[in-house]
Length: 303
Image (cartoon, rainbow, N blue to C red):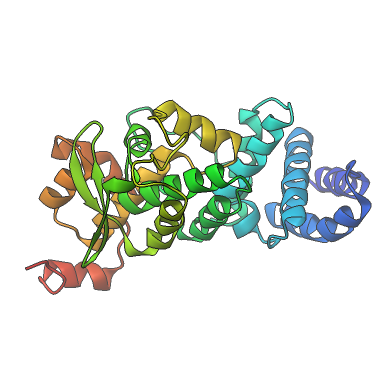
């Protein structure tokens, strides 16, 4: 055991990545701190952790983001980093995602190293975004330099996180479909399951930004003169390092389930056809005892 730890410490000491010297000087103390928290691991796993954590931390340092595990290893940052590497010609490496998620389990969630990260089965929904990721999604949307891309990104983020629209439904929304009602903004969905969806207040500012750059009959997503389709949304977010539309919809649904929104109302507003379709989202709902007690006693009920 002692020999293994000595080899592990020598591996850390000898590690010297090919990155900018100034960046390495800033990153190295944090990297060593994280590796100490993770603890001794086999040579191959340690090599993978060092390689992937270094490049991810360097990306965060270049962006001016906090070098904390919560920020560096957030899902939004990991996907943004990998998408940028793909745009530069590197392969999309699922193993890198697995390694970084393993690191997050240990550094952020407190799971011991070695807990195997398994991808959700097809019948399960993707996990919702963590509230800590919301500001990163907003920053991604607002930071697009091209006006059309900025309008599209703001619309995708607002319609996904604020209204739970599917990718194809987002692509069909025109400026005229956004309703300015006394309670706030609502969206008329015309593709798939026609309905009107009230927008969560926190995402209204992004939708207002998208509206400012679109004509009355323009589509908010993609080329304004035509429907871009759901594939355009997926391609756009992947190439620009943006949030996955399915996870945004799950985040919106779980948010409402935690609010205690009545299921019959949520079913109609979400464009779902059966209550069974909500079953897979319940695993992600978390309530403390006090709020659960309050709901069960009717204190938080909608009357």
